Length: 150
Image 1 (cartoon, rainbow, N blue to C red):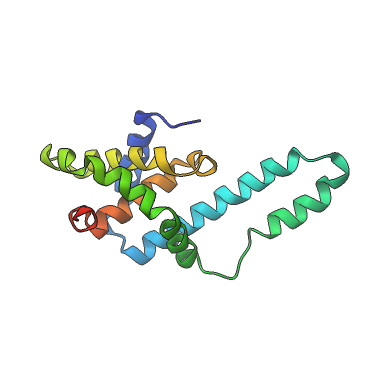
Image 2: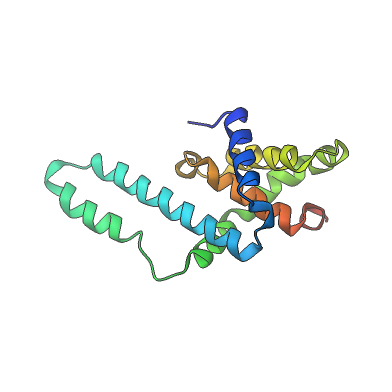
C-alpha cells in the first residue's frame, strides 16, 4: 500500500509545523530509530498471526521481544539509514539536478524527497509514511548538493 502524494505532503507539512526543520541530526536519527522499531514490531505482529495456532503464542512472545534491543534509537536510526542509503541516494540523486533548478521551497523539496524515498525503502516500512519524511529531513540537513556530487 503506497502513500499518495497528498498524504506525503500532509505529513511533511505536519513535520514542518512541529519543528523538524529545527532538529539536529542526532534528534532526527533518534526519531527514525523509534519509527523503524515501531514498524518492525507491527510487521512481526502481523507475521505472527499467519502462523498455525499451536505455534502462535510462543512465536509472538519471542518475535515481539526480539524487536527490543539494547541500542539507542539514534543507533537504530543510523543503522537503518546506512543499510538503505545507497539505494535511496541512487534514486534521489538521479533527479536532483532537475529538481534543484525548479527552486522549490522547503515543503516542496522535502515532499519530493519523501515521495521518492517511499518508493525505494522496503515494503514493510512503507506503511509508516513518517519514516520516509524523517529520512527526507536527514538528507536535507546533510545537504543534497554534497551527497549527490560525484
